[in-house]
Amino acid sequence: MAHQRKSLVIFIFLTVLVFVFALPRDATVFDNQHSEVAIEKSTSKIDSSDVKIPGRIWCEFEEATETAICQEHCLPKGYSYGICVSNTCSCI
Image 1 (cartoon, rainbow, N blue to C red):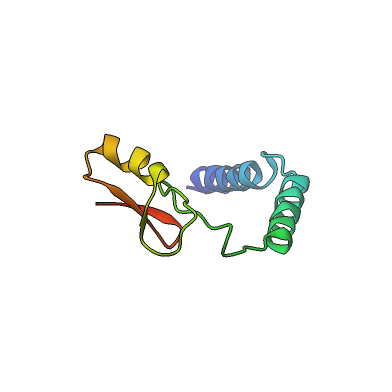
Image 2: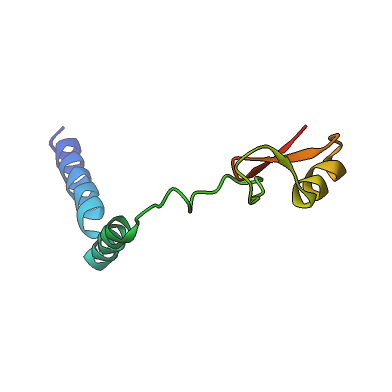
Protein backbone atom coordinates (compact mmCIF):
# COMPACT_ATOMS: atom_id res chain seq x y z
CA MET A 1 0.00 0.00 0.00
CA ALA A 2 2.85 2.37 0.78
CA HIS A 3 4.37 1.68 -2.63
CA GLN A 4 1.10 2.64 -4.40
CA ARG A 5 0.83 5.85 -2.38
CA LYS A 6 4.41 6.76 -3.21
CA SER A 7 3.80 6.06 -6.91
CA LEU A 8 0.65 8.19 -6.84
CA VAL A 9 2.48 11.11 -5.22
CA ILE A 10 5.28 10.88 -7.78
CA PHE A 11 2.77 10.68 -10.63
CA ILE A 12 0.88 13.75 -9.40
CA PHE A 13 4.12 15.66 -8.86
CA LEU A 14 5.36 14.87 -12.38
CA THR A 15 1.99 15.76 -13.91
CA VAL A 16 2.04 19.14 -12.19
CA LEU A 17 5.59 19.75 -13.40
CA VAL A 18 4.66 18.93 -16.98
CA PHE A 19 1.71 21.33 -17.01
CA VAL A 20 3.51 24.13 -15.21
CA PHE A 21 6.99 24.08 -16.74
CA ALA A 22 6.91 21.99 -19.92
CA LEU A 23 5.47 24.53 -22.35
CA PRO A 24 7.40 27.76 -22.81
CA ARG A 25 5.33 30.86 -22.35
CA ASP A 26 6.22 33.89 -24.41
CA ALA A 27 4.66 37.02 -22.91
CA THR A 28 5.74 39.16 -25.88
CA VAL A 29 3.03 37.56 -28.02
CA PHE A 30 0.38 38.79 -25.65
CA ASP A 31 1.97 42.24 -25.34
CA ASN A 32 2.06 42.66 -29.13
CA GLN A 33 -1.55 41.56 -29.54
CA HIS A 34 -2.79 43.98 -26.89
CA SER A 35 -0.87 46.91 -28.34
CA GLU A 36 -2.27 46.24 -31.85
CA VAL A 37 -5.81 46.17 -30.50
CA ALA A 38 -5.20 49.42 -28.66
CA ILE A 39 -3.88 51.03 -31.84
CA GLU A 40 -6.87 49.81 -33.87
CA LYS A 41 -9.34 51.12 -31.30
CA SER A 42 -7.69 54.52 -31.07
CA THR A 43 -7.32 55.07 -34.84
CA SER A 44 -10.67 53.80 -36.07
CA LYS A 45 -12.95 56.76 -36.69
CA ILE A 46 -15.94 55.82 -38.79
CA ASP A 47 -17.55 58.44 -40.97
CA SER A 48 -21.09 57.69 -42.11
CA SER A 49 -20.14 58.53 -45.70
CA ASP A 50 -17.44 55.83 -45.65
CA VAL A 51 -19.83 53.05 -44.61
CA LYS A 52 -20.69 50.88 -47.59
CA ILE A 53 -23.00 47.91 -47.78
CA PRO A 54 -21.53 45.04 -49.83
CA GLY A 55 -23.28 44.60 -53.16
CA ARG A 56 -24.69 48.14 -53.21
CA ILE A 57 -23.76 50.49 -56.03
CA TRP A 58 -23.31 54.20 -55.29
CA CYS A 59 -25.03 56.71 -57.57
CA GLU A 60 -25.17 60.51 -57.52
CA PHE A 61 -28.89 61.29 -57.04
CA GLU A 62 -30.80 61.66 -53.80
CA GLU A 63 -34.25 61.65 -55.45
CA ALA A 64 -35.56 58.63 -57.41
CA THR A 65 -33.91 58.87 -60.84
CA GLU A 66 -33.24 56.33 -63.59
CA THR A 67 -29.52 56.26 -64.32
CA ALA A 68 -27.36 54.29 -66.74
CA ILE A 69 -25.18 53.04 -63.88
CA CYS A 70 -28.15 51.53 -62.09
CA GLN A 71 -29.58 50.10 -65.33
CA GLU A 72 -26.25 48.39 -66.10
CA HIS A 73 -26.18 47.02 -62.58
CA CYS A 74 -29.80 45.77 -62.42
CA LEU A 75 -30.72 44.55 -65.91
CA PRO A 76 -28.16 41.65 -66.04
CA LYS A 77 -29.59 40.42 -62.73
CA GLY A 78 -33.04 40.00 -64.30
CA TYR A 79 -34.76 43.13 -62.95
CA SER A 80 -36.95 45.36 -65.15
CA TYR A 81 -35.03 48.55 -64.40
CA GLY A 82 -32.77 50.25 -61.90
CA ILE A 83 -33.25 53.58 -60.19
CA CYS A 84 -31.03 55.74 -58.05
CA VAL A 85 -32.57 56.49 -54.64
CA SER A 86 -30.65 58.08 -51.75
CA ASN A 87 -27.32 57.67 -53.56
CA THR A 88 -27.83 53.90 -53.93
CA CYS A 89 -29.00 51.86 -56.90
CA SER A 90 -32.25 50.00 -56.31
CA CYS A 91 -33.35 47.23 -58.64
CA ILE A 92 -37.04 46.82 -59.47
